[in-house]
Structure formats: structure tokens, C-alpha cells
Length: 467
Image (cartoon, rainbow, N blue to C red):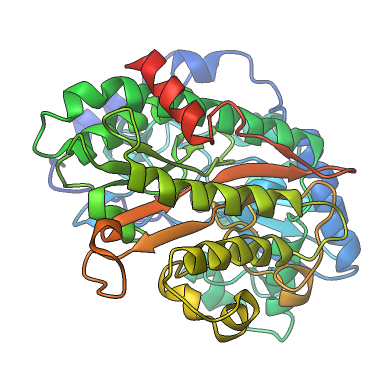
């Protein structure tokens, strides 16, 4: 059965004569890029090892991992497609609607929707979602097999009537065709947990994303003089960083947070519609997502004037000391939660020194009163998702221990709300977060984002050289 074309408001009727004319007279199908020799993607041997490990974990079972589907942004306009991270991890492929199947024998088959032959129908020039002339070429079966180094078949040959474990919530059509089983949640957890320890190839991709992010932050500082004069200076800087992310990667790994002044007290400020004022701090949380979808996640808070005021430096130094203490705890065998607790002890000491609390640090840690000013945890795993491996079981992630190859962020912060009457007036409206990306090594941890300064003196020197 032929699927209906996804035609939209731009479609026009096609006469029999035009349809016949469109089926003939083409050279080798596709653009120059597609027509060129296709070679295996660098991820292919790593993805094959991962699929083998998955088959070994669930021997004799059928496993179904969809790529995901296009999602409507408005009316007939879709968001740019990004595959589910588990699917990307196992294949390196990035086309919508495709499905990876691991058979009980361990054989892996990638069911794909190849580009439509031009001599067969009208999809290639009329279908706004999948047509080559509308959305660009998809690999044909032979090209997909070479690109991803995996057996490939047409998606219409996919049989979903047999029992299987399914990664659910990714493709509603797949969910509807495979009866839910008790093992689906176990598959989802494993697909998350298996990504906790990064292999050599992943570490290279992450480092590349972090390095590009550092260059994006430099772009932002250089753009400050122009952005300060714009009524939406936050958005100006968001655009500057976004340009770097598209030039060097796929996109931003998440919506950039560009928070000037008291906006920095909103943890996920992504409206980015405010003006900039030279006397305020700017908190920017942003990361470049590589073409392979691995993302950085870095936050810097810096004075838009280029120099910290006395009270800004006081608050910043407390967060800096907290982050430094947290980083010092990172090593194989340390509990995942240790770095957060180390940072919060420093924060509690500082809040007591400021006269905000009279209780001991131990009492504050027990009651959690300090959280009025910190609000959230101090870091997370990082990888294909900015909050990576989130479906892992608590005992192997949040309540687990660090291992060599874990990549995580360390990001303590202070969020001193502008209307908080428990604070001295001069502290109100200051938000500070310092976030770095680190990889756990055999002896401790390596700061992947060391290209960006952390200490306030270094930040002032860095800005002075760029402005």
C-alpha cells in the first residue's frame, strides 16, 4: 500500500503529463554529496560494539529501538529532527522514522525509510516531509548499510507482531503495534546506564564540543559592547553563541540561558529578552552540540563592565570556592553525591560568615535551610543528553559511585532573589553559577573546560584581552 503524500499549502495539482515528465530524464539520483562515494562513519565500529553488548545483555530476545518521528512545531512546519539518544548511540544514524531491531540471534537490522526512486511516484518532489526536493536526500539502502556498517532493510518490511522489548515513548506507531511487556522499563534503564562510562571516541567528541563552546563564550565577550546598546541584549548574545554552535556543530545542546542582572536568579531563564546594563553580572549557561550530538554544558558568570564590584566579587568567590571543593572530591570510588555535599558545606560556611545564619554548618546541612539560596543540585552526567543517562537506576547513578570514564558537570550556584528580605539589600538580585565539564580519570578528574577562566582575577584579565 502506498502511503499518502505529506503535501501542504504550497502543493499544486499534478497532471498526468507532468507526472510522466517528472519520472524521466534524471542522471544519478541525488545531490552531488549523495552521488559522491559513501564511506563508513567514524562512529560505526563503536556503535557495533555497543549493539553487541546490548544483545549480550538480553540474549535470545528481540529488542526494538526507534529513532523517533518528526514533531510539528506549528501547522505544517516541523521541528528540525534529532534522533533519540539511545538510537544515536547504537547506530550513529540521524534520519527520522527509522527503527533498529536486535533479533534473538543477536543480528542487528536497521529498518530505514530510503529516499524514493524518481521513477516510482511523486514523493521525491511533492512530499514536504520526506520528499528529496523538499527535505533533502535520505540514504538509499546500500548507502545506509555502508554509512552505518549494519544490515539495512526497508521500513515497510518491519514486522512488529512478534514479542519484543521496546524503547517506548519514542515512536507512537511502534508503541501501538507491539504489546507492552514487563521488560520494557528494564531495557530503557539499561540503554541509559550503558552510556554512563564514555568510551574513547565519545570523549573525543565531548572535548570537541567543549572546545567549541569555549570559543563561543569568547565570541560573546567580544560582542558585549554592541549588545549593551540593544534593548534585547540577552537575545543578541544568544544569537552570537548560536552562530558558533551552528558553524562548528549541529546546534546548541539545549536552549541557552543568557541572564543579565536579576534574571540570573531564575535557574532556567531562556526568554533571553532583557537588556544589559554595564554594572550588572551576566550569567550564561550554554553548550555547543557536536554534529555527532554530544553536547557541552558550561556556565560562566562575569561582570559586563569587565570588573567585579566588591559585593559581586564577594558572592562570586564563595561560589568559586564551593566549586573548587567539589572538584577536589572527584575520583573513582567517590559517591556521586559527594561533590555536591562538599560544595554545599562551603556555601553554608560562607552564608554563616555573612551573618545570614547562626546555626552550625552541620545543622544547616541537616535542615537544608541554605537551599533557599542554592535551590538545586550541583551537577549531573553529561553526554548525548545535557542531563545524560537520566533513566538510570538510582543505585547506579545518583546513589552510585564514580568510575573512570564518567563525564559530569560541577555547577554550584547562589541565587539571591531580588525580593528576598532575609538578604542585605546589596546582595539582592545577584545570581551566580560556575559550571565546568569534567571526566573522571584513574587518579582524579580532568577539567575539560579549562580553556575558560574560573577565578575572578582570571576572568577580568580574560575579558580585558577580548574587549
